[in-house]
Figure 1 (cartoon, rainbow, N blue to C red):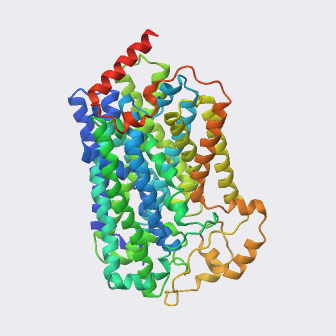
Figure 2: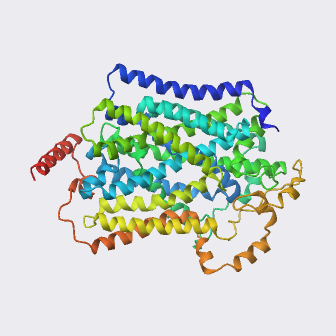
Figure 3: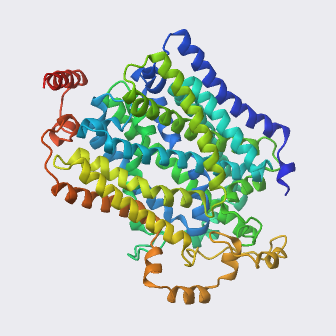
Amino acid sequence: MDPNTAFSVKDYVIFVATVLFSFLIGVFFALWERKKNHNNPEEYFLAGRKSKLLPVTLSFIVTFQSSIVMLGFPAEVYLYGAIYVYFMISIIISFTFTAFFIVPVFYPLKLTTVYEYLNLRYGDNVLRYVTMVMGIFYNVFYMSTVTYGTCVALDVVMGLPYWATIVIYTSVTTIYTSIGGIKAVIWTDVFQFVIMTTGILAVTIKGIIEVGGISQVHKYSVSRMNFNQFGLDPRIRYTFWNLGVTSVPMWLYTGYMQPAMQRVYSTPDVTTARNMYLVSVPVYILICLGTIFEGVVIFAYYSSKGCDIYNSGMIDNINQLVPYTVLEFFGELPGLPGLFIAALSSAAFSTLSSCLSSLSAIAYEDILKVRNPNISSQVATYISRLVTILFGLIALAVTFLISNLPGSVISLFSSFVACMDGPTCAIFMLSAFSRRVTSKGVLFGAICGMSISLWLNLGKLFSDIPADTPLPAGPTDTCPSTSNFSSLASVIPNGYSTTTYLLLNETSTKHATNNLSGLQEFYRVSYMYYSFIGFTVSLVIGFLASLCCEAPKRVDTRCLFEFHKHVLGKQSDKVNERTIANENEVEALV
C-alpha cells in the first residue's frame, strides 16, 4: 500500500481542520484577554487562578498523553507483551500520593513555578537554578520526542518528510501558545482529548472486528500475555517490579514538573487541585489500557493474517507500527486515516503547548523576574511570548537530533529523561519531608544520582551488548515479499532494527551474553530502573551529605510536609491564606 496515495481529500480536510481549530482557539483567547484587559503574567500563565476542575483535569491528562503513549505503548506491547499493564500500578500510586502529600504543601504557597519553592525552602537560588536547568532539559527533550513520534506517523500515512512536519507542528503550537497563554492551552487540550480518545477507539474496535472478536484476539495474541514476569533479575526489560513498583519515581516526578504544577496553581483552591489528580487516575488509566490493548489487537491482527510486518521487514522502524496499521485498516475508508492523524496531532499539540507555556513561565518567574523584580506586567507578558517562540525553535532543533536515534519513542524518552526525573524528584521529596537537609547536601546527592543514571544510559547506548530480546515473532509466511531480507542482512544498526531480530537467533544471543564482561552486564540493567536508581542514590546521599553539613538555622515551615496539617487538617483555604500572610509579615519584620 502506498502511503502517498492512501490519504484522500477528506483525510486532508480533517487533518487541516484539527490544526486550524487549535490555532484559532489560541487567537480567540489572545483577543479575549486583550478585550478584558487581562494582559498580565498571572492571567497569561495561570488563567487568573480560576480554572474549573473538568477542563484543567483533561488538560493535565493530555499533557502527559502524547505520541509517546499513542505510538510507544502499542509498539512496546507488540514486541514485549501486555505486561505493560503493570505500569498502571505505579501511576495509581504516584498520582494518589501527589494528591494527598504534594499538592497540600505546594498549593497554599501561591507560586507561579515549582522552582520558586526551592528559594523559599532554602533561602537561596543555587539549588533552584540547578533544578530549573534540569527541568528545562527534560521539557525540551519531552517536546522533541513527542514531535518526532508524530512525524514518523505523518511520514508513513501522508508521505510528508520529517523536516516539513517538524516545522509545521512546532510553528503552529508555538504561535497559538505564545499569543493565547495557558487558557488557550487548556481549552485546546479539551478539544484534543476528544479527538485523541476517538482515534484510539477507532483503531482498537476496527482491529477487533477484523480479527473476528475478542476470543480470536486472545487466540492469536497468547504469546503477548506474559503477565507472570516476577523475576528479580534487573537485566530483564520488563517485569512486575520495574513496571509496577520501581517506576513510581518516574511517574511521581510528573507531579513536580512545571506543566503539572502550573495546572495546580491555576485552580481556585487546594480541593480542586487535589481532585484534579484523583479524577485523572481512572481516566488516565483507561486511556493507557486502551493503547496497551491496541498493541495486543494489532499483533493478533497480523498474526491472523500470517504476516508480522515488523519482523518480515515490511517496516523497519517500530514507531511506524500504528500508522501503518491505520492505513491497513482504513485505507479504503476516506476520512478515517485523517482522524487518526488528527488524534496524533492533538496529542502532539497538547504536549508541545503545555511544555512551551511552562518554559515561558520558568523564564519569566525564575530568571527575568529575579533579575528585574520591578518589570511591568505588559513588558513581562510581551517578553514571555518571545521566550515561547525561542523555546519552540530549540525544540525544533532537538527533534532533528532525536530522529537519528534508534528505538521506540517510549524507550528513547524514558531512558534519557531518567537521568533527570529521579534526582529531581529526590530534591523535592527531601526538601518537603526532611527539616534537616541542606541545599548543599541535596545538590550533592542529586549530582551523584544523575551521574550514575547517565553513566548507565551511555553505557547501554555505546557498549557492544545485545539488544533486549523481544517475544517470539509472529508468522511471516504470507507476507507479500521476503526478497528484502537479503538486502537488509548487510546492515545491523544498534537498536530495534528488523535485521537484528532476523540475524540474531537464540543460540548466538546466548553466546554473546555469556561472553560479556562484568561492566557490560551492569550496563544491561533495564532502562526502567534508571529513574529508581537515580532517585534512590540522590535521596540517600543527599540526606547523608546534609548530616555532614551544618544544620539549617532557619526553615520556612510552610515548605515542610506535616501529616496532621496537610492530610488530617480541617483548615479552610482562607484560614491557610491568613496564616501565610501572617508568616510573611513576621518574616518581613525579622
